[in-house]
Length: 126
Image (cartoon, helix red, strand yellow):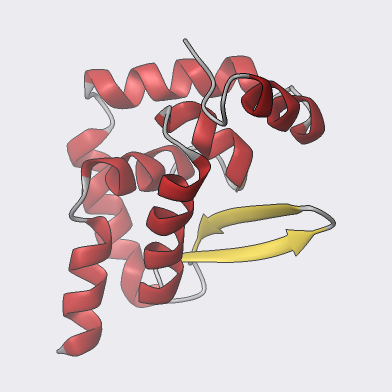
């Protein structure tokens, strides 16, 4: 029961649900890309991502200075949850806006995106 509660808490925040929603479309995203989509401070995004990793919803990997996140598709019990969320959020205005932002920034190197975020006070402006 504790695992289920942690999982539900991990997705019961608007920003965390936004993260999950874009990762349903993009296989993997760098933390800097997630920060740019959410338009939040790096520390805020980090707290959201940590909670999702700790609950088992997301997996992370480090490559050099960058941390990449993806859905935990190794846990087959999460597949119905991911499908349900996808059906319920895929047509939302917020998710469409987030995916439009990601389409623009997905081709920007993480180094350049992070530099832009540092220049703008760790939160890129739209």
